[in-house]
Length: 403
Image (cartoon, rainbow, N blue to C red):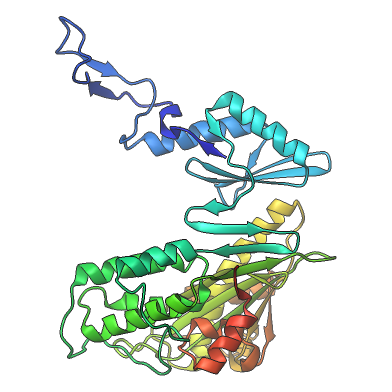
């Protein structure tokens, strides 16, 4: 559902005055101003006023706001439950009972001027296809617009977004290119990562050179665009579980000193719910790691923070107790370091915040398991892989061509 002119519904708590609009001045009182009762588009308070109004309205209908994600609301009626996801004026409605969904729609239409857009098929540039077998998310239309904007709509495609073992540096001796154009492409590509974890690492790398991009950096960006040209309809696919409760399983990985300028490593984190990829991260670490064990340890702590939040949110939406999150790491030294504080001499120099994972393991919130490098699904988020390994890993994380 969509709220029409959402910001005009917001009720102001502050005193705000505006000049009389041209053509609507009150005769003999042209020097006076209007005091606003409700928000207008363009006011700094407008988004907050609208959210407060919507929050109160949903609360009056029996909804509870999630303490872990303030854009998620839940209402339980008997055996049926209703979940609402809010993004400004767009509402995603998820429920187990059709009648309960219809009742909620009627209640919202009584409070606001709403548009009922039916079954979710398009949301914030993401194309959604729902069938009895599963749900697919794709951004083929958005990707096509990026290719047209960059003049790459008819380019030759390639099979990987980045050449294996490619090392880019800020100190490149190649000629400089238009920084504004380069940043515009990167900004567009970063939104595409919402449904394309296969390009998350490559885009993360080229994003590091937005200050002074060179022709070498632009060539790497063009390879990403050529890869997108050949995989326009690729997206995430989510299957149904026939029985049982979907478990949350995470994968954590890291390279070592991948950045040639400051020698920092890259963290890769992927979480699966019932075998379906639900969240992923590829980011440069904030400190320099002295060994692969330390780099993986820092990555595992990042994964633990994400896993705990996901687990709490999932438990809140299900109305059940939190379960232990399984985190898979492919470095046995890192696993020993996480579980055994005896290795103090090996970790005393590591920033205190990265020892958070030890407490999570002791409290039973995180369980770390070993996984072989061949089955490390976060590997695609930490390095540029060869064609065969890349295509194999892309298939394993559940990316499919959406028809």
